[in-house]
Length: 269
Image (cartoon, rainbow, N blue to C red; front, side, top):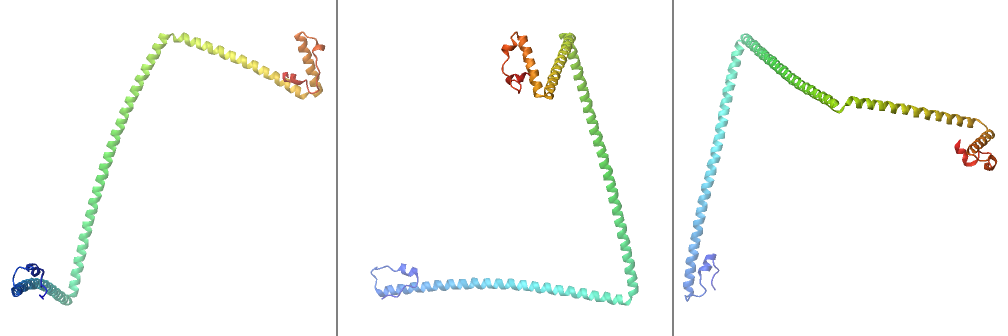
């Protein structure tokens, strides 16, 4: 039995039956396995070389970074030592002449404060001047705008007044022309006369209506103030008088009456 293939390429390279002997086939198979092993070894060596190079580069970058950090720390330490040495030297000098240094510092500080106050005062005055100038400019512009607005409004009012005067003159002229054309005076007198007659007729009608209302009111009050028997007697007299006026006989036209006032004829009262 033949041994299993070591790679897919070795299986594909062996033909099922090509007329060769088993020894030849095994020899060919061994050659193929050896070539495959050599190929794997070359790949492994290339990968190892690439990996070694990458590791070496990474190590070099790490060494450079660490070296840079160490150098930065050394430089920082050197600067700190220099500042510390300078401060110690200043303290030593200050301890030698403390009063003189204090006076000198106090004088310098006072001078700096005075200069600072002068600068602040100058800046304050400058801002004040700029503010005053800005306010004056704004006020001037506002007055100019108000004046222009007032002038424009006055011009508009003058135009409106002129147009209104012109329209009034035109209407007056048209009215006078219409009066002259349509004989308005005579028609106005006729209308006034008709109005006076209508007012007089209305007054006459009103007086008649008031007189009739007063008569009816007096009669109703008179009827209400009389007793039932007196009201019946008066109503009979009135019926008799109406019957006589109509030309009929009082005895023939008189019908039965009731104490309440004679049926439907009570509506005449």
